[in-house]
Length: 469
Image (cartoon, rainbow, N blue to C red; front, side):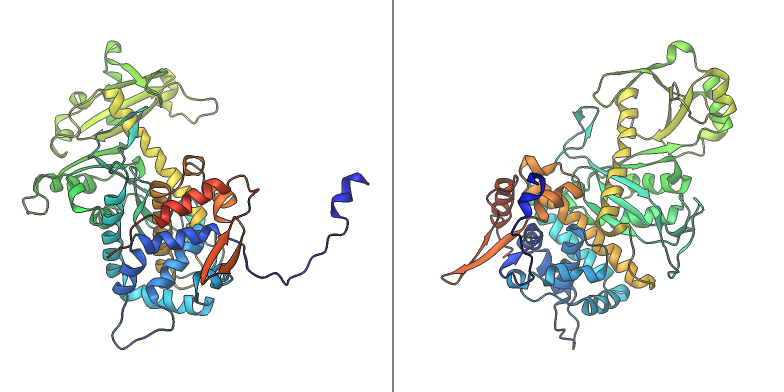
């Protein structure tokens, strides 16, 4: 009886008032306003002769806020409409559908420009400036902006426009994106049919061009582009190399490094067989220590001249070998000597081989960015129409930016490293009661909630951001 006595006298009704279920999402909406994103988008999306009932910039911010808080469908905008006594009028699901449809055709460039202007301000607000990317328990140069490119499959469970069979024999879309490793922002993303290639150079150069345009101009002078082996193409490396040699005023003095996965072909295997045993040097682990049973060597000089002459100037090929984990699939070549081989190409001419290889392997962090994006709207496209799904992907990118900016500008240490699910559980979905006194509204978070003090600190930091003038 004691196990159930806690429920004695408990009554449930649906007549509560002044209750805010997802109070933490108010901070996300407030952040968009304080950094100027809402105003920038509203200005960008003004249409002559069209005065909507709901400002289209505000609608896009509200959709992104809903995604940050865990929404998965357009109808989930009602979680914000429930909070209209805090947020003011929020568009209905039907209005959101219309807005996303309107933005699909003509507004992408204007939205991108608004995002870039806002990003410039956010980076200026960062305490201590732009964070340096980290590799093997050390930091890369502070002025180096690291761009990680990767594509992922999003399964469609119904017939959607341009959804197609994927290389993994599933059905859906194959979007590609560029994440900034320094900040965690999703700078650019492109929706593609499911049968789009993993190494299509035009898709890579297109999304990279959009991503670089998002980087504030003072930070574009030193870039590192990382791509896995599936994204390698000769055309991509040629395009990156041309950025280093361009004479236009906008690119003069720009240094663009690359670190790109490279296929272990028969030619590469033959070169590996001619590597002297003493040439292999120990690899580095994630903490910067020597990694056991893993070695590194450069094989550029062992490759045929007719092959290297076709490469971009300064390209190097570095190979890693390691003992395979149990159950790993090995080629006949790898079975012969018991090592598993991986290669990558880079145009970086300085630094220890082990550090360059560890820097390349840090590209794996992009998988976290993809996973977080799939937990913030990327995992499910809401419409049968390709245009609406394209705008949805744009809202996903904005949501990823808002999450990154929240971490960089406002969240205390107890919340800063939370995964999206944990951040929602601890902060974004915190309940509150709204009271009014003396024409002032007071959002009261529960005193006994374990993360209330951290939540109050986050709100305080957001409200301290000076408004855009």
